[in-house]
Length: 255
Image (cartoon, rainbow, N blue to C red):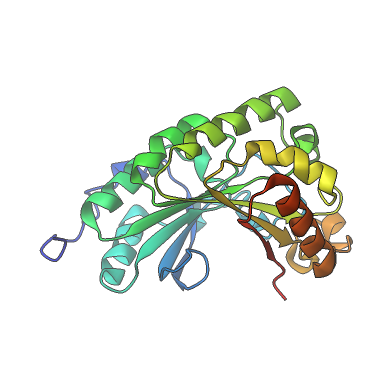
């Protein structure tokens, strides 16, 4: 049904992207969208400052370095028939409400599936995006009382409420749901913390415990932190499976 659709020109669809700060693009990835060949669009800006973030360069990107709307559409047109989907990541996509219109146009005009990476702290944005998504990946950082250590300006009560709302929205989502926790020792690393975090993970989600990799962390503080051994993370995952009765808890060690 898509073969006779004309490419989107520079003017058409540009209004959808006027406020979206696209700051990077990767034409092909085989690992960022499970079981799909995909392209990645990176947006700039974030409402957190996780010391271990590997994309710290996207916290602030000069206007001159941003990707023009006509280039965005040209890249999608070029990859029609080759990729299966696109990934919207950052930075933090929920700071860009224009992505809702962008995702809608993508679903209308292209045979692509759409994956969103987000920290899950903006329920209104997620609610509006869900009709146009096939896969949602939530970066669940730690317990609400420790989000201030990651640069959040929200109170623990506000973080708790926002994560609960995201869980409620995704419990009814028919697509794929993935939660990810980077095992950064200063904020998460014991079974008590992980147990407390499970209340925010919907029953239809896969949960990945990811090994913290200091080499590419944006902050000097994080680069000096020693990551957990894979055996420690595996043991935590096993204990969490046993306690919760949930078998969709996995480990990513990047070894």
